[in-house]
Every structure is written in C-alpha cells, then in structure tokens.
Image (cartoon, rainbow over all chains, first blue to last red; front, side):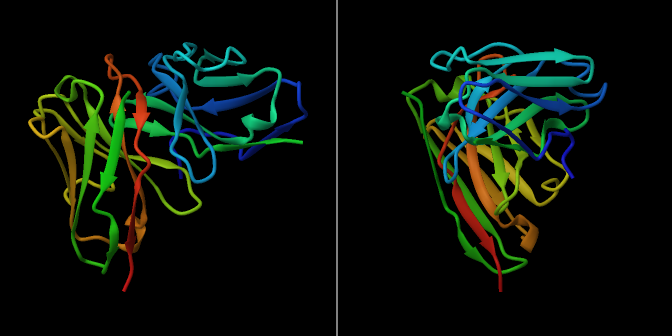
Length: 110
Length: 119
C-alpha cells in the first residue's frame, strides 16, 4: 500500500485537460512543498515533470502544471496529446519515511 | 549530459546477496545526493535508500533497513547498493536516481537493472 493515494486511471480525448490527484497527510504533502511528479512510459525510466509542487524542469512542456492545496497535490495536463499516454507518479518528502511515492496513475488518451 | 548506468542485477536465490552498481557521468558526482528506487513487476515506484554527497548521511526505507547498505565511491563516480537476505518481494527493477541541488527531487534516472529473487 502506497503512502500517497492516486487514482488508478484517468482518461481524456486529445486536446482535453485532465487532472491527477495525489492525496497524502499532514506528515507529507500537507507539510512540505516538496511534491514532484514523474512520467513513465512502458519499459522506460521515470522522468521528472514537476518539482516543488508547481515548477517545471527545463524542456518539459508548459502543458504540464502542478498545484497543491492542503494534503492534496495535483498534476494537470492541458491539451492532451497521444504521447502523454503513460503512468504518472507523485512523490513527496515524508516525515519519518523520507520519500513517499503514490501508487501511480495510468493516463489513457482515447 | 547526465548519464547513470546501473549494473549488477540478475537472478539470485532467496536468502542470497547481490551488489548493484551505478556509474555516473556528466556532473560533479560528489556534489549530489544519490538514491535507489525500485519497481516490482507491474507495480509502482518505491524509494529504497538515499546517500548524501559525501557519503556521511544514509537513509533507508523500512523494507531495506538492516538488509541493504548504500555506499558510494566518489573517486570512481559510482554508487552501490549491497543487498542481503533477499526475498521474493525484492524482485524488481532497481533504478539509480540523482537528487537535484536542493535534494528535493530525483532529476535524472538510469535505465535500471533487474533483480530477480527465485529458487
């Protein structure tokens, strides 16, 4: 059982926007603005997409954005494209655990 | 360009030991914390262990505490994970991941090395 809770799957049509939630507690997401999001295509290594809640690394599309409210962080993908189909994982620093991951969300572009 | 290359994975019997290595290039290795993250077949990511740039600070997930040992050789730009008393639950792809300057996220990942624990 993962420390952070994500929906198992989210789907959307090309061009639409989708949001993936990541729910933690006051010991992780709610207490530290150290939430990151990773994209993982099948058979590939994870890739950092969002860090410190809402910041994008160089080279990541502006279609990806992050936010945080209370114990829940969110990743929004705007203008959904076929290449966005992948698994997405949230991660947060967590008191006593150090790093916690969510169980992952499979994004399907239908 | 940052490059992380893991090695050392393979098939090991339950109760056995294995040492993983991660060779780094493209950045000043000793300046960054490094991490091991694993992924069981068809499952999500699980943080395993982290080590500070100098090697003085080490952290372990509960599942690794007492069985795994993280270390680094900054002269060889190499990160290690010594694993012992392996069980079926340790079967996974083990990724080496570099922390960013603030040590707040994993900004570069290797391609992983597969560890299979089976009799």
